[in-house]
Image (tube, rainbow, N blue to C red):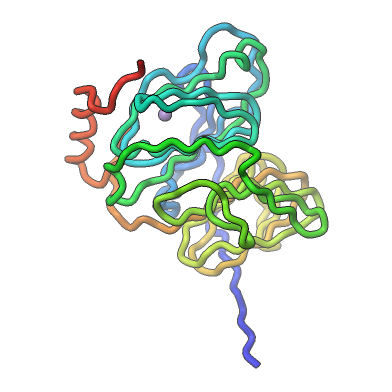
Length: 294
Ligand code: MN
C-alpha cells in the first residue's frame, strides 16, 4: 500500500505593521503588505492595509478619501465594523458594512471616493476593515472596470469540526465550498474565526503564495510558531498543509494566490508592467480618460 504524505508549508516569516498612517482623513491604517521583502513573496497580493479598529465620534463631516484614480489591479475592501460608502466614475457605488466585501476591479481605470457612510458617521462608532490590493495579469490590466458587492449573507460559512469556529469563503474554495468573488487569477480568500483552545487544518495549494493575517487573538501555526495580534505570517510555496491552533479567540484573514510572474511597474494608485504604461496611466488620468465623479 502506498501512503501519500501531504507536507506542511513552512512559515517563512512573521511581520509586524510597516507603518501607521492616515488614508485620507477617515482611515487610520496599519500597513502589513508591502513590508521588507514581503512583496516579492506575495504576488498577486500587492498591498494590505488594516483600517482601525478605531472609535469615531459622531460627525456630519464626510470622512474618508476623496476622488482618486486606480488602474491595473483590484481593490478588495473587507468590513468587520462600521460602514463605508463608495462611488466611482463608472456610475457604480454602494455601501458595505460588517461582513460585507467590495471587490472592485479597477482594470483600465476608475476614479472613485471611499467615505464613511453618512448615517454611520452621524451616529459614530467602531470602524474596522481591511483593504487588500490584488494584481491583475497583464492580459486583464486594460479590461473594463467591474464592481462586485458581496454581502455578508452571500458569503458561505463552513463550520469547523468540534465547534472550532468557522471559515467564511470570500473567494476560491474551502473544503469544496466556493466563494462568490469572481477573480482573474486563482485566489483563495477566507475570513477565519477560531475559538480559543481549538485547532484546525487548512489546505492551500503548493506553488501559491500564502499568508495569514491575525487581526485579533493569537494562533500557533504548525505546532510551533506563535503569531499574535496584528501580525502577518508568510508561508512558503512548498507543501499544502497548515495547522492553526487558537491560544485566544482569533480572527484571521487567510490569503493564497497563484503568483503572477510578470514585471511590476508601480506608481501610487497605478500598477502596470512597464514604466511607459505608468506614464500613460498618469497622462490618461490627467486627460480625464478614467472619468470623473458626477
Ligand atoms: Mn481607492
